[in-house]
Image (tube, rainbow, N blue to C red; front, side, top):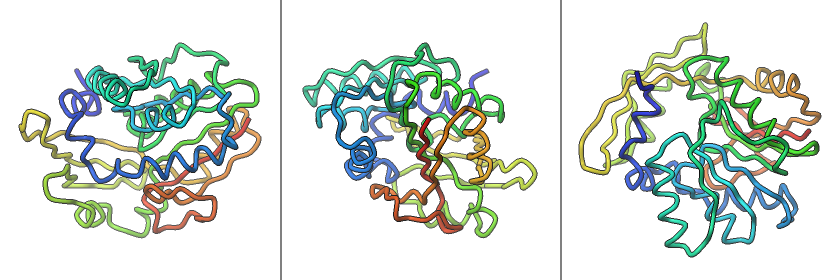
Length: 253
């Protein structure tokens, strides 16, 4: 049986690219460039690359990027967009829980819930972190975003989704947040690329900063910095607060 995150992306590439939460690409790539000091000799792995927005933008800026995603449909669209943009990128269909890479990349990025935190068990989510780490060279860097577990302790996730909803875009309803597991169970409603409305029972894991630090320390990271993730304007100046729906994690081996 297919999981909700597999069904979600079956016919949802063009509509996905119109969602409000994917509109911050240029600013997010500015931050990535700062973090690697604009060293274009570095190899970058984009995990859960979706339709390739970060991979394409970074390649246009002169970087060598490989993009992987579980969804055939998202990868197909990423390849089309790369061709339209006149860039050559190695886009591969791969499962982030079982990547084929070993010590090949200087930087791994995993943005906008690129796999991590969407899995149905904590063990599977940890496999994604393990595989991303394995793909990195000995002094590699890992930049990713994930759902901030401090947010639902102080706010209603339901109200947040309602306030963020825009006409014609996906919506989340019937959220129920479980404090024992830090999982939000909700119904995700989307209109796919054929104009069909679809409802999916979703299940996402929120993480608190101390959990993320502990998980990354067990994987051998020496320095772990966590910030508030502001759409399109990632910055080391944004201290993580209970107001941030997502956190931005920068880890160095």
